[in-house]
Image 1: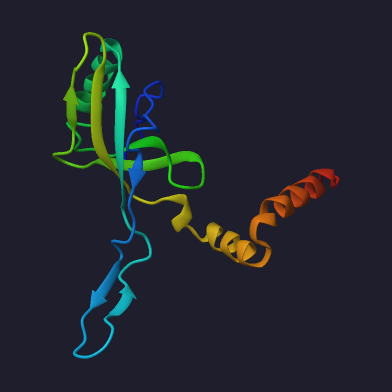
Image 2: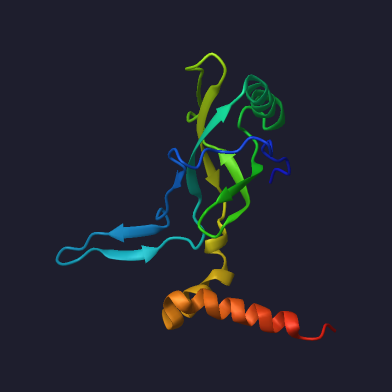
Length: 159
């Protein structure tokens, strides 16, 4: 597992195809008659993120230095802050081979895109299953309940 970080000052564009996909961990088996059967292959699935960046010349040089030297042309994993539905948090990712594209359509900026494959997202961890149950009981008022609980907990004496 790589301990190097993607350059923190280079942020993906969130208004241009910032996306990720899920569902590769479910298998579908055809049966002779009726609906196919579905079952879970593994609990955690790698999650691909499509990312786009607008970089200055300096940022592009920093990115190339990171790509060529730090992550060995994409051969090593690295840490990157991404939003997979639970806010912007650290993800361990690999750059998917063959997805890096860069071009310079204007005189001053580079457009860089690639697919980053996150090894695990926070929503795949056990902590989020209780949020689902809470939402099923309280619906849109779940955030109000959580805020009230947080206020209560902050009012308790510390040990």
